Length: 141
Image (cartoon, rainbow, N blue to C red; front, side):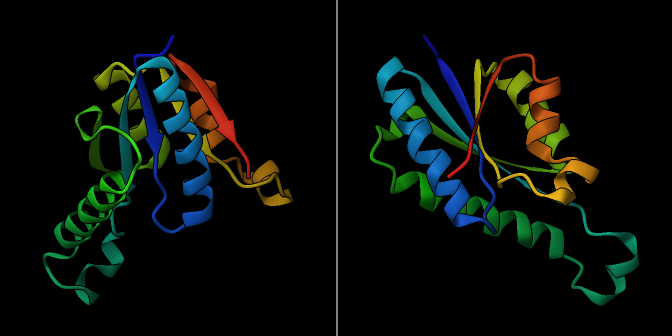
């Protein structure tokens, strides 16, 4: 059914991430799919550049890659069918670009329960659902 499943990972939201990742692993086992875990690091606004070390962005990207690799290694899933990627930029554009580049046929994403702020401002999950060229499964714990 699915061959390639992309799972956006928010390293600051372990509960939401864990729930979505557990479901993605089950779907991948069931369908024989490969998993790719993606984390998107946001660019630091230029106004803060003087207040952080010159290699701040590179260090954040390295830390995210190490966290993703550790998370992938702990999955009860064949390691040869799991890959990780860290991209830099806006969350939904980078997730959508990775899905396109990698050829994902499913995106499994965890989401907060709706609140007034997400109705007014929108959310990454909503935008991914709206613009993805593949199926999207949004999971709430």
